[in-house]
Length: 486
View 1 (tube, rainbow, N blue to C red):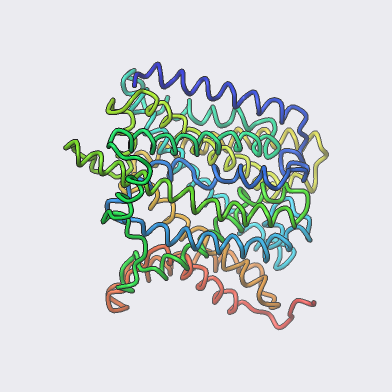
View 2: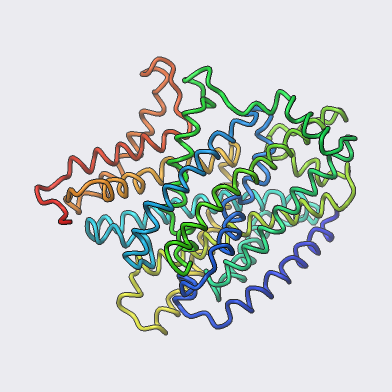
């Protein structure tokens, strides 16, 4: 696939995307940017959220992890679905009742200003790092397909990629994202389904033969109950999935910003449950694709890339299939990646403007709009710089990097919300930032020494639960005698 063809594919895709963004966002005010004026239809939001949840990391990393992890990721995805049901019936009614623009305003109402800012800053760090890791993956693929053949530096690649994200989100915010993400979801699902079709056809399988081959493959083992010390152990993955999705979706301004754009809490609940169920089937498609890719590589004696993240790009764009497969790969990748990056950039802008600068509480509409635009540009620049830094430091699978980051940065947020919702205790608010900083440090120390201290036990994504628990205990130590009145 030539660099020019890749650029033409991206240009055609973004021409449609910009058209949708302009039509839906041209009359958006600040509330349209922040909450979509709470007029979004639940089924549109549910469909749109698939692309944001999947991201370019899933698109590339999940097929590649099949060789070492089999279908064990599905255990975590089942936990995701349960977690989204808990979000629907615990968090959504609470946030709607309080009529929040930013969900971290809950922490101010419950504990005080220091807790509020702590939650907002931890979200800022979490989302910036997570979004940058996801967008970094797109930059790597574009560098391979476009910028390297044109002898262009990686920094130009980053500027180009981040600028596109800024361009289609700067006007309409959430109001535009609901519709642009719906387009991305459609492109994402169609591309992965057609890639499965073309690869199966090349291998000589019809649908039933392909299904039987995947079912019988050693790579498709999904459930692991044998060794509790193993990172793939079912209950470790399942419960980690529940708490991960509560932390990274239910307590994440990015995803909840879309949910809070629904007309009422009942619609938001329908959206959350529906998107959770759909995600199981979408992830299963990517796992099936992984088996097909490794099977194809084995039958054709291909030298498999060292990093699993490189497998799908290597085969899809390597000229082994009709050109349409390479085009579908590019469309699917940019659909997934730009959906996650666009919604993250909008959420970061919202949280920084509302929570950290508190512009909506002290400024008029015009001043808020001006501040929001400046913050939006600033967030884009910071994201670009973080991507460049990640490129210098990267040494692990991208999807593992995302979840490791989430375990350490979302843990304090999860612990604070659990303490606030399930207890009526008040805390010494000014010391909450100290607890939020110490918890990840203690979690890291325990995680690093767990094999020696706990008879070979190894933490996986369940380190998030440990991190949140440490935060919860820390808040208990800060308890004041006064309790919250019912």
